[in-house]
Length: 177
Ligand code: UTP
Ligand code: MG
Image (cartoon, rainbow, N blue to C red; front, side):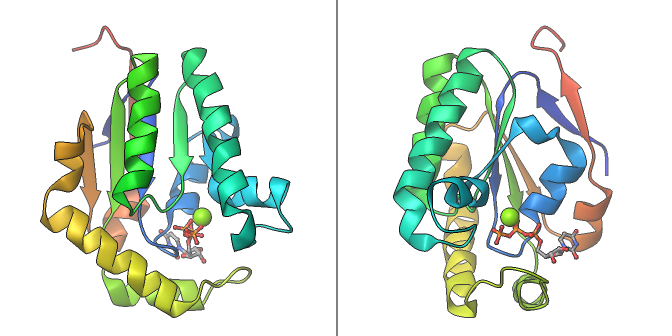
């Protein structure tokens, strides 16, 4: 698989259920300061990375940091499930306000694999019913072509685990063709 072309700067939105490998991919292909993760924000404003009660404050913080990065014209990767349309819409509005392109990278892996990886995780394991809910929301979004219609400039869909593992990104300056 060729490298994913990513405009730099841009907003990169990862989309995938808990356990699909978003954070693993982000850590491998982007710099730590570029990645804004909802779990890390939960740990800052809440008890720990899994504190669901802190969701509202965590996303408020994520959005503040995102707005600041985009204002400075620095690439930002949002590492959150983003399986709900309203979550993606709010992020797209930030990109639009900053005049930045938005790229979606969708981890649309086999459901059984995602559930297995979530169960096998060393630290935080997400309730399987929650992961199933994420999988269902993702299915709706992909099967109805929602992301393309929402206004992402590019949508990359990764369907196989081997494809995800081999994935690399190639940054493109805005002037490049
Ligand atoms: P992640 O912890 O990267 O998933 O991987 P995630 O999408 O960010 O999950 P949430 O949303 O934060 O909950 C989940 C598990 O899958 C393994 C990781 O090592 C981890 O245990 N994994 C991930 C693989 O085995 N291969 C991969 O290519 C990616
Ligand atoms: Mg994660």
